[in-house]
Image (cartoon, rainbow, N blue to C red; front, side, top):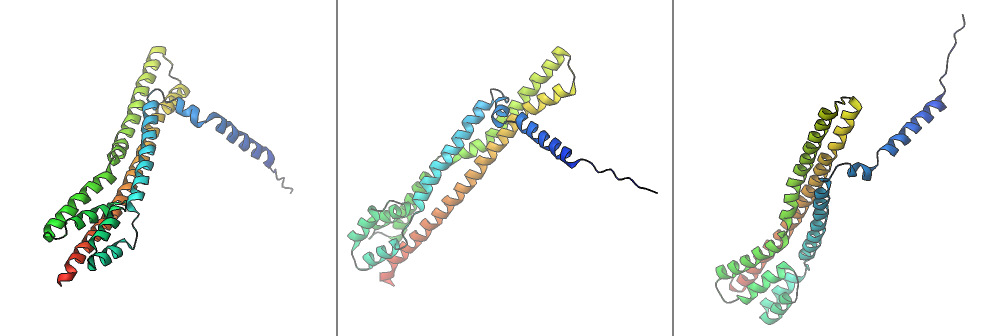
Length: 231
């Protein structure tokens, strides 16, 4: 008894799949897709641009503030221990970072009670922290309101879609599905922008905390230097 085996033409299947992928790529274009989101995409564009600008502006500022010479405190120690307070002051004054400015304030208060020196340095440290954290709240704000803008765009779009369906009486599935996916573009965009801003905010906050730890360590070391001669 003979058994006939029919082998499908694989080349036709591959060509069909390739054509399907090409058609899908032609139908889905990022810029044309975003353009269909409507006028509420423009506030989202603005929020995205603001998030990127604030992130890189703060990143550069925080990186600059965190650059601290490893030998800085050693030189300060040597100058103070030898009584050359003027040289220590000049070094701190000519070094552009938060630690140096905080140490400079401490050197200016040498001779006063330790509590007063610590308080003065703490006040400078708070000002330096404020400078580093400046505009970080903008990223936090964008992370919160960008998804809301996106959701608002989807709600407005859905209202328009159902109004058109009610006016025209066209209940075809293709029309409804096409309208829904277009209106959800704003929600997807808002969520992505909010996620980018949230990640950027937390990353920069971590960098600020690292710099703050360096400032606290340097402040404690400076107080120890002042107390060494009396030990």
